[in-house]
Length: 256
Image (cartoon, rainbow, N blue to C red; front, side, top):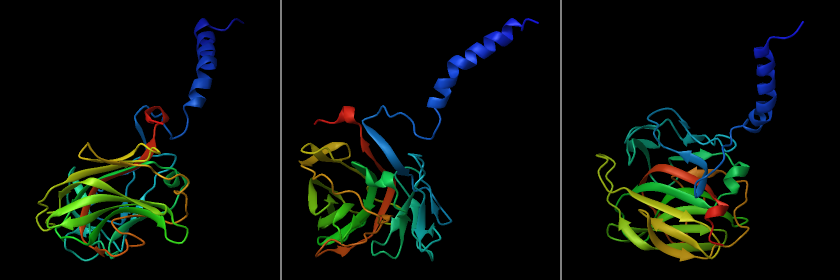
């Protein structure tokens, strides 16, 4: 008996579409932007110990609040939730008593872009404010992004990559008050692109440098809000952090 025409049409359509359906499976989406995100922690948690990553590339790099739980400033536990640049943010003492840890994964070792919204308190010169850290002091592989106090109410961005340290040429305010969530939020970004590597502060160029190659891969955890190895000669200070993102520079956007 002859099959109804609509069945034949359905089967033919399925055979045509099947390869496309198989090709689209999996969590990793095609990237058409200058930076392809590997992880994005919005830092909107107000309780619990889990800190969400909203990018599956190829997995969610969910963080854990240490010591936890997350509570409003200045309650017991920590880190502490404050009003951020976008919705909530997390506030860190800077000395390692409160931070977010993320297990090491291969995608966290293949990155070339770092960014975050930051609101440091005023501590003056000779201090550091931790943003994110995945640097191994033994092998001197990995990366650290932090701020350095350079004077009353002024800081600058610093990147430690491998055995090298690079400093932005722009300063910005350090005036955050965690009790009221009042203060200046600043967007800091660093992109690694060989001799075209650069800092940006609030979207404006803030210095260029030549990034070394082969200095990213290690097995240590990624920390947000604390450094596993403090910069030499600097004391810690407090900071609020929001919208932390790391990613890869799209090859079509590279200047090399």
